[in-house]
Length: 455
Image (cartoon, rainbow, N blue to C red; front, side):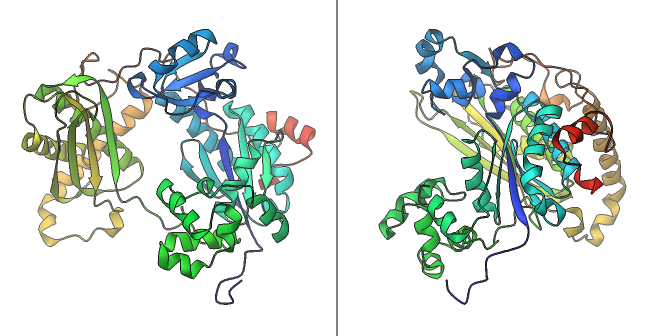
């Protein structure tokens, strides 16, 4: 390898915990009678397949296929079909992350069903025992099966997780000697590598690169000149040199909320409700992450596949100061909508994009802001009260929100979910169990592996 490049890491392991068939697994939590049966979950408006159980995969059901094309297959094989229930999925995801955080001090959630763990010291030394133990504990507390991939870098850990899913034990490590690593990477197509998109995967064969092993052996400086620094980092990650750090120092730059409508919308009042609802959703997420923003963009469009001419418009507006105030952003969103709305079009989708996102300590205050401090503080307290109430209430009519978001559950813009599972009331308590008590004590006796914080 080039002497100018850093040496592969020999300390610390990255583990990625990936929930198996996550949405499908969540649906069977309250329907244990469906375990072992083919099950699929559909996208918004019951459009396409977005999740499948292992049994559904064995029937040849592919991701992204429109549900209407599979109707005969569903009926012939008694496939259980569910509309997406993201409240259920997010709650189970939160529970999984709580379990992981109980055993590992550094947990970085990557998606709703994936998290990176950094293992060093005792955790690294005991990783062979820790991973099966984590799989058992997540299943015990959260009720969903997971797989764990281990490696010196995040990119290799992602590849290890693909192999782990095919193994009965559910774990696999790519922290191996170089010869064995190259053998395994030779059987992995380049498009399966984390961060290699479809376009890049189609271009790499022109350089004679079709497998992960071939990309690993490529000259990183030449690949950077031909493509990007991202590919340079990926090559080094495949060689065991940590170059990607998603969690440390990273910060959200934008935040979006959008949805396709259940029915075509032509009335401005309905569009107002939809845009106000999406703005409220985006701002609640912004506040939950402790961030503020200054700009909002509103988009509306018709269907790509409609019989009428395609129509799409967008508009943005900057606020006077950085804020996480739903009222201020909703007022700005309504002004944006007024500018881009044209009557007569059957709108199929709307959305908002929050940009210029910062943490409060990054915002430079102006002397002119001093007069608005009192009103700003009052709004901040109001948003905090709303968030506090919403955290204790079920979604729907009980949720505290702006009147502009509307209360009509049958509004044409609302998503169709004809097969949605019931909304359950979640009262799972946070993990307060002390090491050595209850199920952990039994697990320790059975697994002969104590919790890490007891070592």
